[in-house]
Every structure is written in structure tokens, then in C-alpha cells.
Length: 325
Image (tube, rainbow, N blue to C red):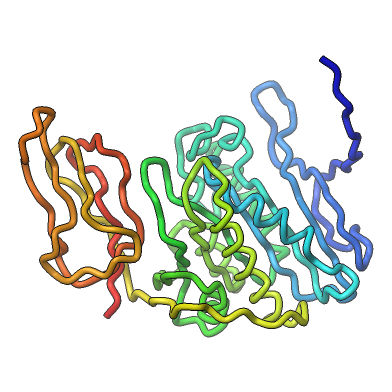
């Protein structure tokens, strides 16, 4: 078998200096973050679009969990669509944050830790903490704003929803501009990348763009639209802001419902379905098909996400319930 390889000559860097990218140009880099057990470098892909002005700097991150893929083509497509001659400010795209997990097609870091629960990491911590700390110091601290793209985890599906601190006026505006189906109010200081950025006074939101281990064209289009809206709001572009065709539902909080027994789980609700207290949510049957228990909505709410795995042992997830009022 023969192949024609294109040599891209992407430079390898040890630190990110945004001014290394000439004004009104787009450059790609490999940023050395850590080394593996053989001493080989683990490099982070960096995309920089530097406009005719240096500020503001908008950061776009994806694949903090290695199996959450929809954000990757969102960032790629955005960079293909940007008119670099008209762009004001700088866009920094990190299509894959969690390189070790991405290579393994796994959600968690290679020490079994959820990278999005330990931000901003520790300079002298364990392997995942060091990775998180260096990513924050070498990349995120360059940002003025952050949009962090995620998806549901394995065995679950999500609506298109946003997590944001809705009490912060700029963060609230960035969230509303995404034209998401649902927004969940989440204060910072929760160990997430979004929360760690917020602690640095970087307005940040999390976009939950669909399902894991796949590319979903509709979700990718939705993510692109919201980012273009953010660019226009930040006066980085002059594009018209696209208004949502249906109003976004804002939740004051959310939580998961869990099973208290094992068996075969059947869900009786759909994503974005509004529930009244007492509505039937799910049933569990044993392996012989006998009904063991049913689960009902504990209060009024909306279905943000749900399990799609029928095999469900005690303590398994059922639905992610958003509380509107």
C-alpha cells in the first residue's frame, strides 16, 4: 500500500506566546506539556488565529474528557470559517486537552482521575494534577474568555445545554448567546476547567454538545452558531447575532436521579421533556421480565440528560433533572 503524506511542518514550542503568531494570520503549534514514562514528550495541539488587534483573547477547549469528541470539529470548523483579515482580537483553540485519554479513547486521565474534577491542579501533585496545573498555567491564563466544549459521558445522552454562573453578567450573556435548549446555573469553584478559569476572573461557560464517542452534525452546527454569537458580542467579528428559534430554559439547579436496585432499566421520558412531580420516569425489571420498581419525578423539572444503558446496577444513573423554578 502506498500513500501520499503531507508534511505540515507544525512547530514544537515549550511555551505559548500569542505574539509569535503574526497579526491577521492563523498558526498551529505543538506545545510540550509533560513527558510519558519513556521520557517522550506529550504535546498539546494549539490553534491560534490572531486578528488585527491583540485583545480580547477567546479560548476554545474540547476533549477535557478523552471520549468527548463533538467539540473537536466545532473548533476546526470555526477556524476554517474565520475571516482572519477582519478578526479583532485572538482566538486560541485547543481541540484536544486530555491527550493521554484521547489516545486511549477513555473519559478519565491515565491515572483513573477525572481531569475536570481537579482543576486547577497542583504544581507538585500527582500525574493528573501536574497535567492540569501546567495546562492552566501555560494555556488558560492567556485567555480573557473561555468556552469549554463537552458531551455526555458513556452510556448517557444529553440535550444541548450550558453550565454557567448566571449571577455573573458577562458569563450569563455568553451562556444565553449559545442558543442552547437548557442552561443550568452553576457557581464556580467546583474543580472544573470552567470553575478554575472563573477563579482567575476569566468569564467561562461549559457547553454540553451532544453524546460521547461520535461526531453529531446537528450538535456541531449548534456549537458553531453559539461561538459565532459570542465573537460578535465580544466585538471580535461583525457577524449578526443569530437568535434562538425557541426560548432557552434556564434552570436554577440540577441533579441526577439514581436507582436503588439493580436490573434492566427502561426510561419513559425524552430529552427536554418537562415533568411534573409524580410523573413516571423509569422502570426496572429483573432478568425474567418481572417488574421490580418504578421511579417518579420527585419534583417539577426538565430532562437534561438520561441513561441509555439498560443494564443498571444499584446506584446507577436514571435522569439528569433540571429545576426551573
